[in-house]
Image 1 (cartoon, helix red, strand yellow):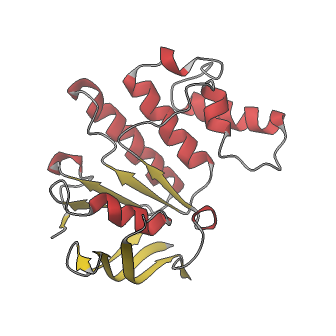
Image 2 (spheres, rainbow, N blue to C red):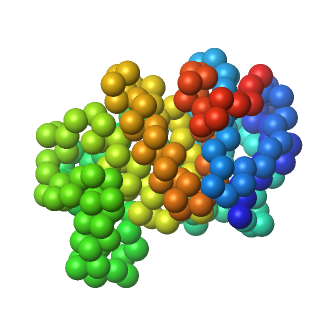
Length: 207
């Protein structure tokens, strides 16, 4: 299992954002891409999950577990994404947010069992009925990640997910995120402008 970017180049109105990029992210590995704001990091992730805005064009090949993703609709790519904002639905409780990405074929009881099991594993047992507004920043970050992972993606993209957390939360949330990725043994691509976000101190510079 791996996520492979082969000679990826993104242009905005024919002007390239960065030099052609090629890399392989093996299962259970977190590869970090660094670069200053505006260099195209988030746009790169958008191209991988199929959300590239009009005006941008992509050349090169994106493959996941041997399957070419170019031209495939976003909902069929099996790629999850975690943003720096939690993007939780304020009108839904924790259970409603986490169940959102579960298959429609699952019964309500099956969904509740899956959500409750995930919450317990994340130290949030009994939080299913909680209002999103009552959660701390760290709790929201964990719920957001769990929601992305419950959809059973084959790869996950991390768009500066720790940048808005204070120093007290940053380390624990990062540890939780990396533990979950390792447990599921899926490839992960993290973009950031902060070297300390890297899983192992290594990174690729986007320029």
